[in-house]
Amino acid sequence: MFVEPLAIALHAIRRTPVLPGDVLLVLGAGSLGRAVVVAARHAGCRVLVAERTPARRRVLAPLGAELLSRTLRSSSR
Image 1 (tube, helix red, strand yellow):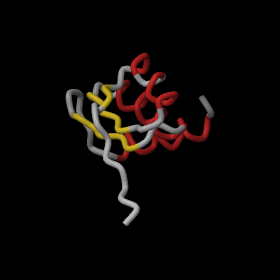
Image 2 (cartoon, rainbow, N blue to C red; image 1 turned 90 degrees about the horizontal axis):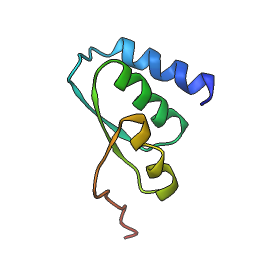
Image 3 (tube, rainbow, N blue to C red; image 1 turned 180 degrees about the vertical axis):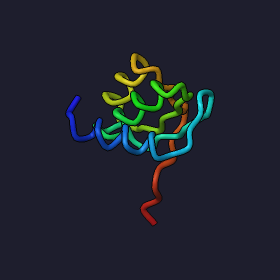
Image 4 (tube, rainbow, N blue to C red; image 1 turned 90 degrees about the vertical axis):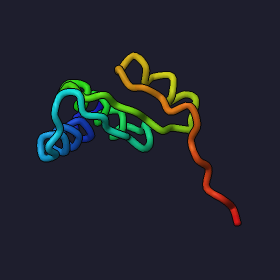
């Protein structure tokens, strides 16, 4: 994990009034999304993640995230 996304995630969690047991939704599991999962889990939060990419979805469970079973696709209309 890179240092900058982790620093951003920690800063965001510290500035947000989250409490242990709160539920957070993370949209996307890129490097920043994964870092937010780690920071939020460390703060005692339950974390739900919406991610369409199978490879990214596979790395989320070991981080303690819960995957949403369906994600919305954007319409091409």
